[in-house]
Image 1 (cartoon, rainbow, N blue to C red):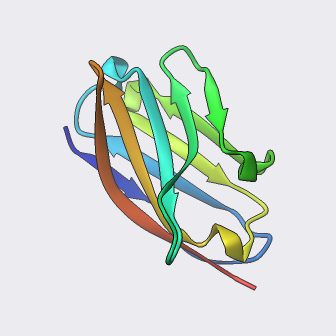
Image 2 (image 1 turned 120 degrees about the horizontal axis):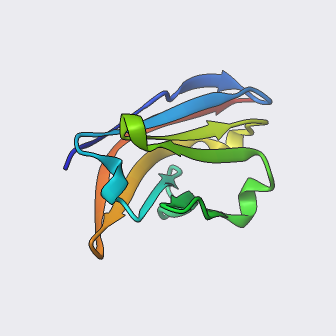
Length: 114
């Protein structure tokens, strides 16, 4: 399984981005799809996840600013980032869970300028 993350870039504070995670296999088999991030000098942390039945989980710092969705027909998960702040800067990684195993994809860099 290969996961490709895209959609990162440079955005001003208050702006928005849509991150996309594309899987090389059918996402119907993924119990969970999600996103982590790693800010410079900090540990990697969960941002959001969504299960196969649509249960969503968000980190406390999201505070309603981000939404997560999945499109199984296109083997894709999305993370919509809104009201971005410089503290949201980091590499965002997508991951999936299938058959009790976690698979991580490459990251996409999000840079938020003040």
